[in-house]
Length: 327
Ligand SMILES: *Cc1c(COP(=O)(O)O)cnc(C)c1O
Image: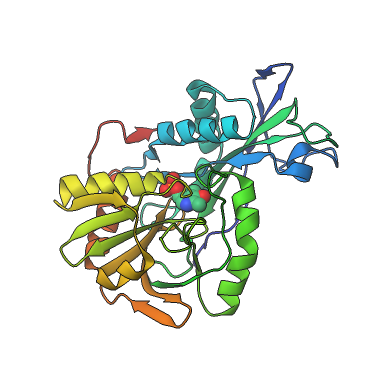
């Protein structure tokens, strides 16, 4: 039975509160429901940001985290942009380790290829009516076992371009704000109803260049074996993508290029993939833009990249010193 990418329950969650200018110690709880003001800034004005990472069970039964320091850096960027209080690395990583340990028995087996998805988040809890940042916040972490995001493993997915945008130029696209997901719900619903797995969003300014999907970055492999990915400030900087770039260049000798990618360039790509913590690396077989279809028959290099990334994440091969840490 496949776990899929959904909430599959948890044993213990972590909650910490911010008030009068500082974060408290926090505590573990087996109840993920809380009392909250109907006027909380998160509920009324979307003052909410999150992170996503996974804990992996290695073959020799160690519990591994993949580059959590990068999640922490990005989390603080998101918090700052939404006028929410940042936190130091120690608080972030200690809370994650605590939650992972408390949920150890939920971590899928090495053989299953599943993982424990960890969701840290901060949102504003104070009652607001006029628009302003909250003075109180909740930092929470919920962890739950997951399988693959697009519910078909390494099967391919299909994307359609959209007239809608998930982010505005100079808006929130480069941070992990809940609001970006709110704006992606409707276009994704249209994509699903039209037989696609998600939208491929274009740059919101000109609608001619590739950005990303609702939850994953996009990478392409050209006919000359270049690894190419959009350089856009409305794309969320994916840690999976950053890692794949280093793997591609150091382990597969591919040339890595980050630049604007025109939609029409898709015809020059032999492989196209969607990457992120949840989706890992999922090959794309079709991008449909109005009545133009771009097809990708191969996923050979993406497959190699996927295997290398997963081997590093599950501790089968060592790559960079600080990428994998034991809980
Ligand atoms: C989280 C996210 C990603 C993937 O980032 P990772 O760090 O690789 O998990 C990609 N795009 C969007 C919009 C995201 O929210």
